[in-house]
Image 1 (cartoon, helix red, strand yellow):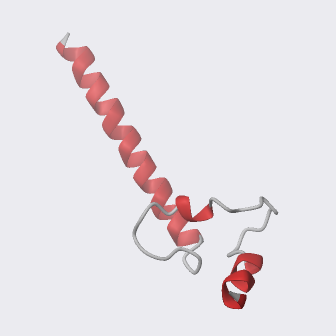
Image 2 (cartoon, one colour; image 1 turned 120 degrees about the horizontal axis):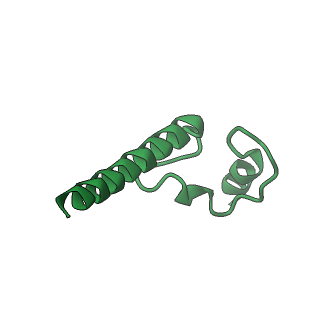
Length: 66
């Protein structure tokens, strides 16, 4: 029973560390697009999936126009 508890605790901790690493890498990749320390993936909600791998020029143009 203790072994299954420890395995579960380590698995959850491992997933949390993995998610933290995904967030940091995403922020590093889209540094000019992300503002603040909040959930960096949430800033990409309005992404239209155009396939670009850099900061969205269309989104930046919309922000400057408004």
